[in-house]
Amino acid sequence: MGKILVVTYSFTGTGARLTELLCRSRDWASAQVVERRPRKSWITLRCALESLFRLKPPILYKGPDPADFDLVVLVAPIWLTRLASPMRSFVASFRGSLRKVAVVSVMGGKGGQNAPAEIGGILDRAPFMSTSFTMREVDDGSYAPRLLAFAAALDAATDPGGEMRPFVLSPETAG
Ligand SMILES: Cc1cc2nc3c(=O)[nH]c(=O)nc-3n(C[C@H](O)[C@H](O)[C@H](O)COP(=O)(O)O)c2cc1C
Image 1: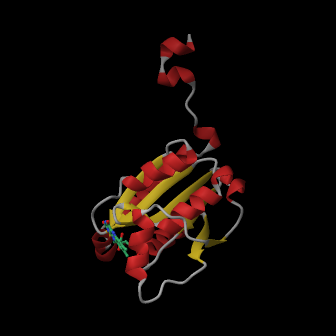
Image 2 (image 1 turned 180 degrees about the horizontal axis):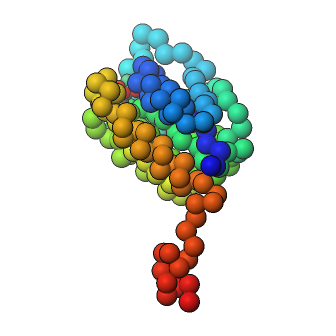
């Protein structure tokens, strides 16, 4: 299996629950993105302004060097139908250390597909795989089978011995 790291920014704890299951079910490392300035009473306004203007607030990264991993799974919420700003800061700051990324977004119900698109724009290449979950799926537990299937697919795809030989994909190209 390849080495996989899960980097999470979670404001209200929903994404953190996904990370917990991912890392408990697989032998994956975990890291957190936290904000330098904690959000207080005017939190929603600040989240909204940062999302609207695609700002990159100062963050602290707590974890191992992402460059040491074959794949980094980014777990982040959606704010105003966009990627939550602290994860935007992380991706921009660690751009050169992210070889291959997968994206898991969490949301109320709208905008999940925008997170991989935005991350792909920052990195100049599309994420390897992506998926999104609603808060409701996380609250009622129905997220688990799909998240575990996603994790299994990532493990299989980063297995160095698991690459298909050309003739399996196309007998013509294999000659
Ligand atoms: C400022 C703000 C804006 C949000 N905007 C959206 C949105 O546009 N679409 C959506 O589906 N959910 C939106 N949400 C809901 C979050 O994406 C959702 O609660 C998510 O599960 C939070 O993840 P977390 O608990 O890991 O922080 C927003 C939440 C906040 C605080």
